[in-house]
Amino acid sequence: MQIRNVAIIAHVDHGKTTLVDAFLRQSGIFRDNQRIDDRILDSNALERERGITILAKNVSVQFGDVKINIVDTPGHADFGGEVERILSMVDGALLVVDAVEGPMPQTRFVLQKALKRGLAPIVVVNKCDRPAADPNRVVDEVFDLFVALEATEEQLDFPVFYASALAGSASSDWDEFKDKIGERGSILPLLQGVIDYVPGPEIEAEGPLQMMVSNLEYNDYVGRIALGRITSGVLESGKEIALSHSERTKTRKGKISQVYTYQGLEMVPVDRMVAGDIAAFAGVEEVEIGETVNQVDHILPLPAISVDQPTLTMVFRVNDGPLAGQDAQYLTSRQLRDRLIREARVNVALEVSDTESPDQFRVSGRGELHLSVLIETMRREGYSFCVTKPEPVLRHTDAGVLEPYELLHMDVPQEHFGSVMEILGQRKGELQVLNQGGEGRMRAEFVVPARGLIGFSSLFLTETRGHGIMHHAFSHYAPWAGEITQRQTGSLIAWEAGVATAYALQTAEERGTLFIGPGTEVYAGMIIGEHSRSGDLEINVAKRKQMTNIRAAGSDDLVKLNTPRQLSLEQHLAYLAWDDCLEVTPKALRLRKLLLDRHARERQKKKS
Image (tube, rainbow, N blue to C red; front, side, top):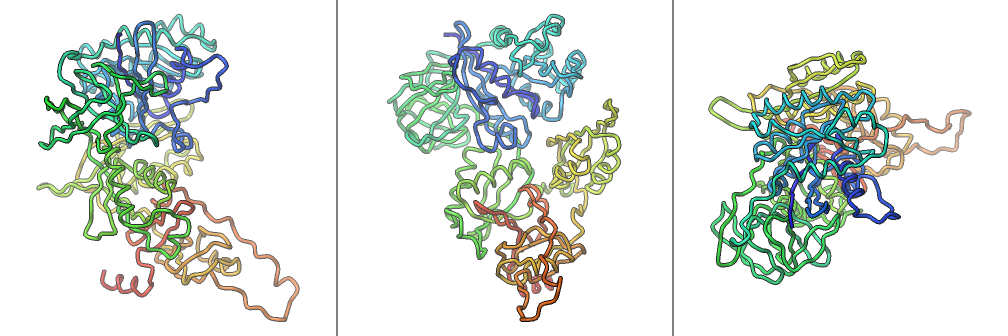
């Protein structure tokens, strides 16, 4: 059987997952009367809520006599660890580019990874049915990007397909395709292009077993399942194997209970899998990403998967707040540490290390989104913990302290460009490129310190009235840019424990913006709002009105309060100061001081 292994890479929201939907629908995977959801591969709840791909997924389609293994990869640079390890399983890549937006920052990021691995690229200009589509301009921009990334002559001679993934149609001839835009077509010419332009895997069918573990899944019935491409040899059920690593001398043994292959979306048990195919196996619980599966008598580890280093770090600590155990299942430092270590085994771009305190663990990731997705996932699993303010991962060299910088690309209406420029200037951003975007819009590229972009996304959407588009990706390390003041105001802090009353909140509202409403349970040291001035202010929000037998007309009318400000997880993280932390529980997010006791906070201020 012939095999093709191909990854779909693209910028966020350029149509990767929708394209996979079209492949699955038209390749005969589903019954004619079967109900099928859109974005089938975005099965994770967080992926559906955020509208982005977070985890890489494997599917396969049968096209004639050829089995095509397709991997859908994340488009956001924060999940680059998923991209890097998945690209080790494939021989080609479908680069999907929006016919209006053209190449974007994360297009550059994922393409650079693919070209470095020597993959055969096929360019798919998607969304050709959009009103402002200009495929010819986009192809020229993609070619310029290939040149800038130092692609080889073979890679520069890439085939181009024009597509509308939503309509399920594609063609290599633009003149023919543009006359049929809006009609329901066929995606099969693109599948034929994969067979024609992506080479088959280079294998040693008769050699000793070699398979790099590139992904892990979990099944309640069989436990941990390891996925990867078989480079040489045969993988068989019931056989004993050895697990080796190129950076370790020690090997471990295990026995495969079951081998699996992909048929469409399903993982189907088989007796054996041959070299060149993407396979999965169960039975070895301690297997990790980056390990090589070998025969017991032939230990030949493959080169380990290399990923870019993290750029942001934060401390996860045990929740010592008074309300910690109300709605959580996992609270202890041991449970928190075990969960973070498990995540680091699967999420290769994440680094977890112990600190001097047994109740605190340092977690480093690719960016704010990378870390916030981990936090949200853990709270939904029943964990309760606290996290501190995100900080950049610094490098100390002879030339001084270096910090990570991001390349920010944005497209905003012209009338909002000045205010956005001002905000980025305060965050040490430097303008690199400025172009007229058409229809009264401006396109610009900035280089900004990674810490300057913490909390910038929500501020950007507010300033542009929701009409701005922004994306960013890691650029380089450069000298420390100096202090960045992200918040001039202090916090309103609860004075004592109790239940917030409307009577007390009415007084607090005069001092700033509230984050809570009446009936909210509070405790001493909890942040209940933003002070309108610099410096923190402690206030009693659980105070009740004294009851008397005297009544006056109009004085006891219902208290009217403004709607409290609702913060998202990312906005909570952006709000944090150096002495704050965010309490995370399955049902609540609470801002609080690291030191709950006000006397301890006063002593800390005097020392600092």
